[in-house]
Image (tube, rainbow, N blue to C red; front, side):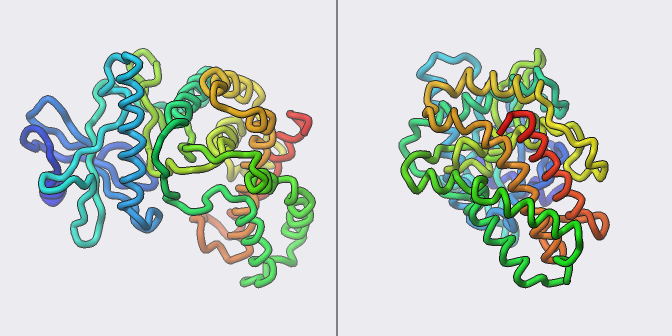
Length: 352
């Protein structure tokens, strides 16, 4: 770990570095805890440059967001601010919050003491998540700076529709003739126009873009020892998007009673308790800035995200499994079928 100590040593840490060891099981970035003899410990992360191409833009977004949240917390008289917003440490010799070692990009944040993450989805954890992500959006609703898209067109359904059409036209590995693929394509095409309505509403001036987290999961929050949410974490995907991104994507994963690659498609069912709890929490904290159009279309957002993910899985299957990691030959096809089953369950449950 000497090389990691060397990298961490480029940042303006307080105290001497004692040890660096792995932290958590993140799927995107390599993460380590940096122990010091000072009052604070730190989190060192290798940024996944393959996903986040523009690290300067990425870190600028995060700095603008965290400094604005900090200012809002200070203005409201909030206590224990150091545990309620992430703080990224600048380099010793510049104002940058990232270090390039010649091949990898690194950043350091202050470790938030006495905090934990949870992964279990229950109605209560969903309610807390709804409140936290709604508050996160609300605090950033008046951000005076324009953020860039760290992953351009990440939740653009029209783009995903075009990618599917291109995959079908090319049919790179000859999978389009399979009966199951054909059935999915027919069903997707029947629903595609309606599912693309967010982009149309935006062009018509009816739907604004907000600053959104874009990766809303129960595990992307820190809790204190009493189970109360401290702050939202994993800010790499924070960027302009429709509020549907944070609302719909949470429910896509949290309200499916089986994993997204479960092959028992008949077991896929939309969990109305999780939906109700998350929605109540989200509206409790987000209603103050949401427009009527945004509120009226929240049910659409719940259907949109499993549909979009099904399109992405099927596109990758037709292309020969070039994007998502797969464990067996039909893995992406199973995923697509699973997500379309969830889409149908949402449509039935919410009477869409």
